[in-house]
Image 1 (cartoon, chains in turn blue, green):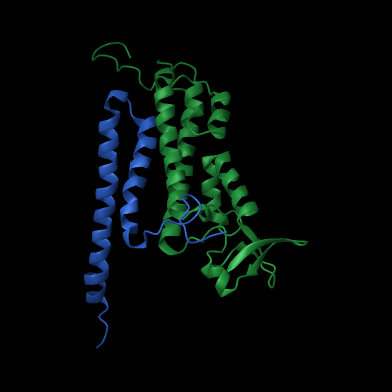
Image 2 (image 1 turned 90 degrees about the vertical axis):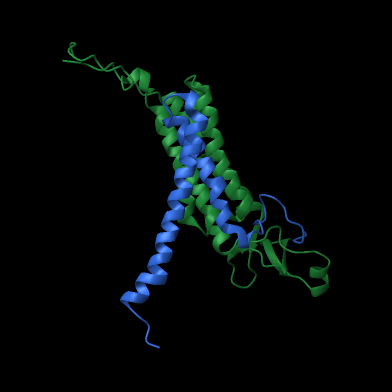
Length: 83
Length: 181
């Protein structure tokens, strides 16, 4: 059998450098499924899916920024590495 | 004293939800919600398979992940069965049942399916294992996507089992101020 050609759903997708973009479709699918059962009025469904998707993405972005700040600023201040 | 209408669980809808994501809602005539729930759960499942390949579902090597993935339903077990039976083989030396390396191919022997080393010429000719193993961060994200699908399906299952809000009294209008409770 050949391994040269990429087979969808069988081989891993070669997107190692763009891994962080994969959170976008995951957030969209979570919002679609979750709001399908939690949305009180289905007329507002697309709007609620959009808002929930944005909440996930912005929340994760803020979490990433906070962790970056802790690792690059706070920890070196608290425990400086002797040069 | 106010009393809520009797709450009735729907075991048939729960069984349908176990068999296929969203089917419980379809059985309860909540078609739109059932379709969207199925799109959400199966979207996460197949997106995980798309980025991680079939190696993202592995009941032998990723047992803990598989517990969460199993919540998606029979489709997870079907993919795992295909993975174990069509893509894995035994190491001839260690007897370990595993995915093939890039310089191996799967051959049927008297002992069952085994990995056989390829010559450089055979590798150049394009021979190799039937799938490439998912590695690193991509493999983690793929497995996580399918586990999230499983956890979402658990919520969908419980929603199919429980009575709809309009029947359980949760959506009942509040009494007007000064009215009888």
